[in-house]
Amino acid sequence: MAALPKDCSPVALYYDMEDPIRFSRARACGFAKWQEYVDSKKPVEESVPPIENAEFLALAMLFANGEGVQKNIALARKFVCANNRDWVEVGSILSTIASGKTLDICSKYFGRWPEFICLGRDQGRINQELDSEKAQIRSRLPDNAQSAFDKLQSAYRDFRDAHETEKEPTGKMNTGAVQENMAEDLEDDRKWAAVLKNLAAGGPPAGVAEASDFAKRDADLNKAYAEWMKNAIDSDNQSDCEFKNDQNRRNCPNQASLRKAELAWLRYREAWVNFGALVWPRISADHWRAWLTAQRIEDY
Image (cartoon, rainbow, N blue to C red; front, side, top):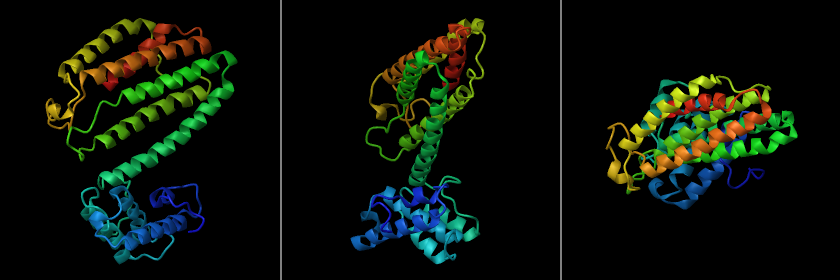
């Protein structure tokens, strides 16, 4: 325990697949967090914040599954029940334990905070993959394309961030919009990683279309964009648009955010054109635009 940082995360340690003693480290960190909770001498609802309460689920998994310890179902249940029930589906987790199945809080939906933690875990993994692919690409690029690659990465990040059009409606704190945005970012980064993997192998991205396809795809994109703008609200007040367009949506984007995202995407598209011209000069600009426009239509 002395070797662990005070801000350690039992769940992060539990899922650290490269650590041969991850279960021992997760258990030590979890017990340290548990001692803080016990020392607080407060009811569960008033103790540590929910995100830290959800960290006790690492202890629940260890003892429910017998990972690095002897199985202890009663102790596993205790660590589950310490969680804030507004954010963790305690009953569902207890049912999984009772069924004798392996407990993995990232295997299905067990509440907002487990989902938050697991999305963070997956984002960390994809970030490592992205760093590896970028390093390989840089080792292959000619000097005159290094700057264009930097600009392409920057344009991608700006577009991904601007792409987040969902916000918590005013006065609402439990809609799951944060998790939805995290899930969208993760999906975007997975697609980006797939593109970078192809670049690292020395080839252009798969699916580059014919230049002659661009005009039609651009027209289709303009139609999709116009439809979204028509359905979006014209203010920043998210509470005004709750359930406005689709009863299954918790909130909806506004016109300003859609316009911002589209401008960021156009800059991202042209960054590809500039980068492609340096690395694959025989591929025309409209080839890149047709490929990227088809991807953007899927977003809508």
